[in-house]
Length: 276
Image 1 (cartoon, rainbow, N blue to C red):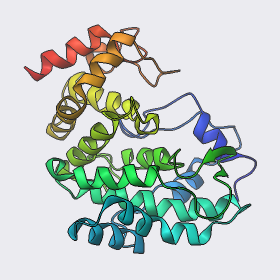
Image 2: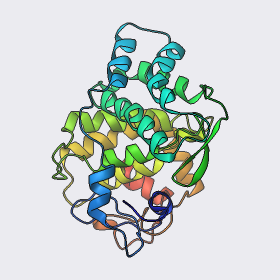
Image 3: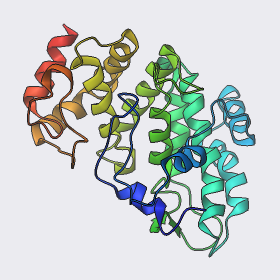
């Protein structure tokens, strides 16, 4: 059993280490924290065959309207929730929902993901059916479903399955391209829906694709997705010089000596030049 409020430590930690792979993200954990326990407990299982995934794939195949598809997708989770539900019940209900969305995104060509984006938008707009709209997740009060609680954590888990990371369930190159396309699509909507801001993950992909000395073809293909679906957002973030704490936004490869902390115009030019 993890001691104390470990979920909050993970969610709010500022430091990262790229130990074992360029994507694997570790937080600045308290000294008593067992990293292996974290991996065993929180790294998502590949290819979920859950009720949620079956519901999602069926809704998309049958062209169900997004709101109805969203209600069907989250129904098993809400069955586990009630006012005052323990965090373990809430997390146990949310993880299959988000894991199913991520896995379906991986298996859906990026050009055909608009229905999946529409379903997630509908989920984000749902009212919590079981009482108060606020629940406690990882020690924080969040709104269900508008804050998409734990979706970001599930995306971070997916980064541990990037091609070449050596996990037992790595995504293949096409799945990695599709996941980045999906997140880029969501991020393109973030000006009106802040919960869809996954620009940090975009920066990590772009760093691996266009700053590494020898980027893999999978990284490059994934990086292109961010310019295909979220170029306007990348341009604005660079103009605004959006930064991240600690080493989250540091330069990579040939640019590791730059004092970059996130997006900036010079970095954007590096990425654009690599695309030419």
